[in-house]
Each structure stands twice: as C-alpha cells, then as structure tokens.
Image: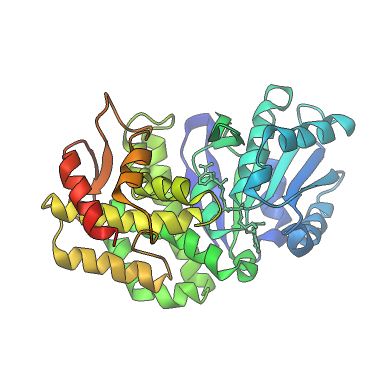
Length: 362
Ligand code: NAD
Ligand code: MG
C-alpha cells in the first residue's frame, strides 16, 4: 500500500492506494467519528463490492450501516437522485455526525460528496473510488456536484473527504474501455507536469493495461500527487489548476458534438491531448518526434488520437468558443511548452487553430 497526504491545512486527508484495501477496517476506523454510516453505490458496483465493504464495516463495533443503491449512469447524476440520498438519511434519522461512504466511480463520488456537503450543512464523507478515472482524478480536489439539464456539473460544492481508499483490486472488474478512459487522465499528468513519469508510463503501458497491481498503484500515486500539488496551490481554481484541463477544451468539444456517452470522457480527452500536442507543435513549442511520442503512448493505451469522423473544424470552434477558460472572447488553451510542461495561453491565433483542425479533421 502507498499513502499520499493531501495537504490542505485542517482539511487535509490521506489517500491510500493498493490491493485489498476494501478489507481494511483499520484504515477506515479512525475516520468515522459518529456511529451512523451510509454507503452510497450503484446497481453495477453493489453486486461486486457491497458485501465486502459491509463485512469490513461490521468489524467496527457499534456502527449502524445502511446502504443506498442508485441506478448506474451519468443520466442519474441529478438533483432528483441526489434527493434519494437526502431522503434516505432523513428516514434513517441520521444526524450531523453521520458519515457517507461513496463506493463507485466518479458519478457516485460526485453525488455522495455533494450530499455530504449539503446534508445538515455538511457531514463527513469517505471516497472509495472503483474506476481508474475516479481513483486518479475525481477523488482528489474536493469538487462535488450534479448535472443540470442546462449543463454538466453546474450544481455543486467544494467538500473534501476524510479519507480516500483506492483499492486497485476493484479495477479487475472494470470494462477495458473504462480502464483506457482512466488511463487518458494518467497520461495527462505525465504530459502536463512530469517528463520522468511520462517515460515511466512509456516503459510500462502494456503491463498497466494488463492491470499489474504494483504498477497501477504507482501510476495512481503519481497521478494523485500531481493533481494534489496543483490543487494545493489553487484550491478554488483561479490559476495553475486550469492546467489540469490539458486536452479537455478539444475533448469537451468532442463530447458535446457527439452527445454525452457516445465517446467516454477519457476517450475525448485522449484525442484532445493529441490535438493539443499538434497545436503546440504548430506554435513551435514541440517537434514532430514529440507528437509521435504522444500519439504512440495514447494508442498503446487503446485511446483514440484522431477526432471523430465527420466532426468538422467549425464544430470544434463553435464548442470551444464557450469554454470557461476563455477571457474577453479570446480562446485560452492549455498547450505544451515543452513536453512535460503545460502552459495556459491565448497565443494561438484563431486562423492557425482553424488550419490545424482542418488538417486533423480528415
Ligand atoms: P462512472 O462513475 O460512470 O463509472 C463508469 C462505469 O463503470 C459505470 O457504469 C460504473 O457503474 C462502472 N463501474 C465502476 N466501478 C466499477 C468496477 N470496479 N467494476 C466494474 N464496473 C465499475 O464514471 P467515471 O469515469 O468513474 O467518472 C465520471 C464522472 O466523474 C463524471 O460524472 C465526471 O463529471 C466526474 N468527475 C469528477 C471530477 C471531480 O473532480 N469531482 C473529476 C473528474 C470526473
Ligand atoms: Mg477529465
């Protein structure tokens, strides 16, 4: 097991990473202050890991544990289903000392975190992320929330967990496509801030995709450390945290154009990082060998590089024009200058970007 401490003053918390952590009541016990615990999970994850977690919690004396199972899917990450958590807590007469445990991917983590942020003005919660994406991304940073019909993640709060338990054994049941999608975010950390980690990923990508537990533990640790570093510098997102959006401006354009759920977020980010790399080359900040290096690594993680067939440069520009990072009508992109270092920039002329997209969208 490896442990990373996310350093946020009195809101600091540990992330434990490794195999068989779902069995470790000793790791969970110190972070539960009251006697009431609600596990929130979904109908895909519950049959796989609910019993194991309940058995572990049963070893902590005097706990009242209830489990709430939501339907699986981003489509249910909304206020209506959040209300089921609040209602469940009220029906069980859970007090302000109750603890919520999120058992599942990022959807369950975001919803449970937001329920914890809001129930009786805030109660503690524990994250047990079970997808690679949630282990390397959504479990660090304290963003919680739900979708609104008019926008993704538009309703939410910052609320830090007491503890994150990333059990690498849970990844054994994850569909291959979801593993690749999570790997896109892992590769992102190498590209944006750590050339050494990028080389390490290049040395081990096949073994990682084969779910080698030791290597996955290391990859998750490095990823969380990179995100935690940027988040600690910029907890409420005004500066360096934006670098975590590498590949996401192009990626969101792909997700919006294709309709959510068609391309997984990580797949869109994979292609988005490739496009950001090509854009960086156009700026003269990377060379052809760098572009090839990025494309090769993405392909080894079974991620797409090229944008969806039929997606036009115009569609890209339309969606990218509404990106949150833009200022005063100027498109702001996260690019690489050089490989292993990301910059937030408005330096790329629109015409240049259009030309690049025209070349890539064929
Ligand atoms: P997800 O939660 O939908 O999980 C993907 C699929 O895998 C689901 O069908 C889920 O039921 C299933 N699954 C989960 N664990 C499994 C396991 N161990 N074995 C088999 N199947 C399993 O998706 P995700 O990619 O984990 O998370 C995406 C969500 O996270 C989005 O809603 C996104 O907005 C959010 N997110 C939040 C943050 C943040 O900072 N809060 C960051 C990134 C993403
Ligand atoms: Mg992302």
